[in-house]
Length: 186
Image (cartoon, rainbow, N blue to C red; front, side, top):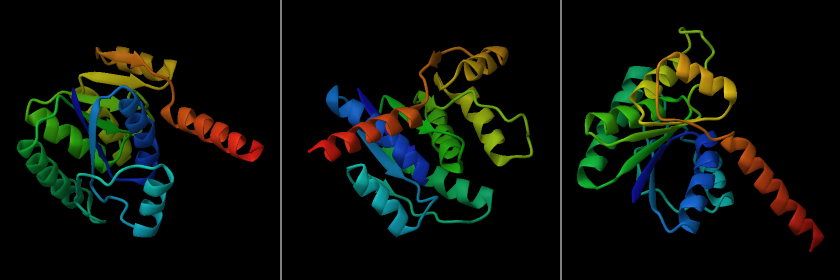
């Protein structure tokens, strides 16, 4: 199985670390691309280094801009990368422009999408994040919901493929605290 993660923001790098490490342990081929939605080299590179992630297969370096401009650049770059490579799944995280661009590019090419942190709802459609969440949840084949409420939201919308996966950020926090505790004892 070949999986591609599409990320572009600092919180997504943290979430990616959990998936990358889990795939590595299970000998699953897992690549990632960085849209560059958060583009501060100091902050992004530090997180990537701290979580021992390999360099991305592609960095689109889109930077800031209007939502349409930013998402359009991402969509074009992700689509080109997917056309040149062969993946069984595209994994997207959260509710960012990187998330919606990754899901749109994959779904338009017939590649199944898995969405981590699906089903979260603010119910405020004026928020770009809420728009992104809803679009991505309806494009995804597998919906990894972090809470019982998120599972119920997805069921209320008639969606299938829902997995109550728990909170990936909580998982990373607990692992990090455990590692810090082990370091302090040595």
